[in-house]
Amino acid sequence: MKHKTSPLNGDFGIMIEGVSRQDLLDPVFQREAFDLRTKHGGLLAVRGPELADTSPEELLTWSEVFGAVEYEGMTAREDKMVKGFPILRIGNIRDEEGNLKASLARVPQLRTDDDIRYNPETRRPVWHTDSTFREHPPIGSVFHCKQAPDEGGETLFADMRTAYTRLDSVTKAKLDGLEAVCSLAHHDKKINKYSPDYPILTPEQRAANPPNRVPVVLKHPVSGEPALYGLNSSTCAILPKGEDIAQDVLDIADLEGDEHESVQILRGLLPTITGPDYTVKWTWQPGDIVSWDNRCTIHSATGYEYEKYSREMWRLTLLDRAQATAAE
Image 1: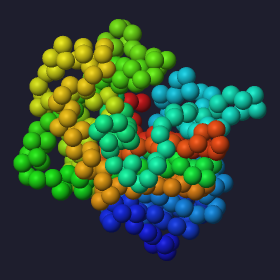
Image 2: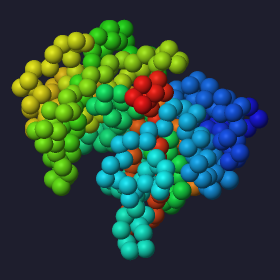
Image 3: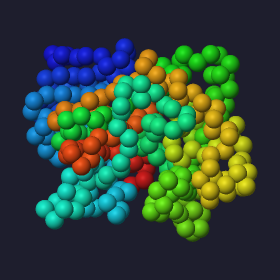
Image 4: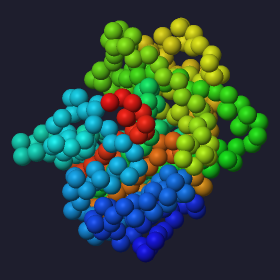
């Protein structure tokens, strides 16, 4: 590759610098970037002075290098979208009338890099894989920075491929036979407990959205490498593969928002696997585009001074191509 590349943390994550908008459309550059992303654990950043002016069309073309862009699931967020595109704005920007035109979730700002590591007492940062409660969870995302705060607002990533590799053989054998039970009703009730305005599912909605099961150890379909998987706010229990979840356990999870104690086998690893050996703190500059693979990474948002700084990010969600085609 003619561009300068820089590793982000050992063999986890790679940045390509000096990237132009034309590069994003170049099939040769696209193939090289895809291969680099796969080789470096599913985390790729591109940076260049032209990229701040990346158009929605160019971002869409670039995103399609890594998966099928999701067009559905934007209900009730139409005013937060880039008009005419499956691009969700995230941040605190407002329109001329003062209304938010981006999706805003307030989370704590990092005080020091020690805060990157998961804290079992505060359960922060909220490290996760996206939407594991869905029948076909998204395989990744693309984030593009339009405006960045002067401080804060970093995005954190952790390498679940290396995390699994470094587990002892007994732990690996135990995890290999397990599944995460991921429930949308549990996810929403969990959030509702600390944010009472957040809606919970009606009984009818709960019945229409049964839990999804995902492997705790996922073999990547491209690289073939195993990685830890299934960490999400929707994860309410960890069970042996194929074992039914007891209805009373599911009721407590869905109606009260409490995780079953079995989740600790996975959550208990978080303080280790979000330590410095496994993590990247990405500090955004306008124009940056980062693509990550949910099948071998976890990530977390961090906060900033919401009343002081402006932030605007564009986000696209990626689906497995075969599953997306089958759903059409």
